[in-house]
Length: 218
Length: 248
Image 1 (cartoon, rainbow over the protein chains, first blue to last red):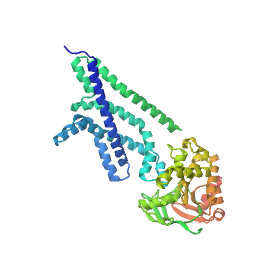
Image 2: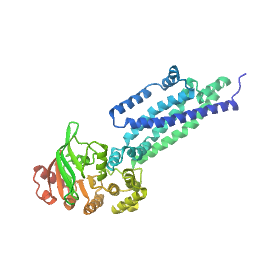
Image 3: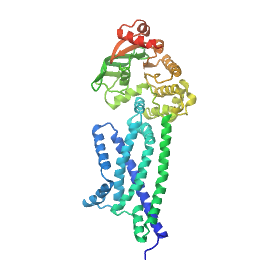
Image 4: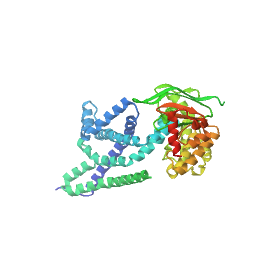
């Protein structure tokens, strides 16, 4: 007889939720770091470098994430590099996130008025100080709503990791559902868990957006 | 001291693609001199001063600032920018920093002086432009005139040898023009070398040693303000003066 959905099953889902959060955290942290590099290279003023970055962004935005995960997990295994499922999907999501965040921040950097950079140059500030002290603080503020929006997409997107056998929240739900034959209840709980994670972020993001619009009106 | 040459531009040519913005410009500025640049829009006056601190690159000719020849090397650009302060039409204050932080950043980062010293310098110059009591506010909390005075103080904190003004009063409401001009007059009286792109002819009469008229990327005519306004030599200058003085 099939087990009912009880505490052990709920605990299993919670562990899946933990892996979802951990994967999101790693991918977001890695994606932010690499994405910042992408955004800076994309706006560096050197034609060749800007083109290469553009191609990089184009490839990762223009192909399915699913495919990218396959390439990292199975493709690298063929070359003799056998990665743990978590490491493989973490790499895949990080690289993918770096392309999307890089493009979001590229736009934000370019949205900072040109006069800000000119004033900084006229004051004798170097590139590193111009970016760190003047452009990036303003660009981050501009990009915050889009960045939070991407984070929400990323949380939900980590369910794709199931495809290479990584057990995160969605995959855990599928397993429990198959054992208990209570798909409505199980996926209801899974959905609620995603919602509790994502909704506050979405709410925060739109509040940021409203505040930014207000600041721009002044 | 008075005759020392601070800026020397020779045969400067500048193109934007196929459009020539500066045609064979020669300009010598001596220490302590106050120069007003005027001319119709698109005549190249802003471009000219933006070449002096290398916000724009030139394609031909030479620019020497305080004995340093400006070329494409980062070092030369650095040295020149340390000596040249600039004030913009749209203020360009850093909106995420307080007035005080706006004034302290460049001295700390580019001159590498201590925070304590930078703050003392910043407060001194903010007092001088009569805005010392607003030091902790953000730019958006100030009026346009106040913002432009902060921008002047911010440039002065780098202790430049020359100040460039790019239409500093054009973005201001009429009632705020005077406070900014008064600040500039004070600076001129203290002996600062200044090049001002402006249409404020009263200011030109009062402080300029020379008024230079530009059109189509060329210097058409220059002279002491008295002679320049009373007896302009070129038809183009007379036409321009007729147009702007009719409005004042």
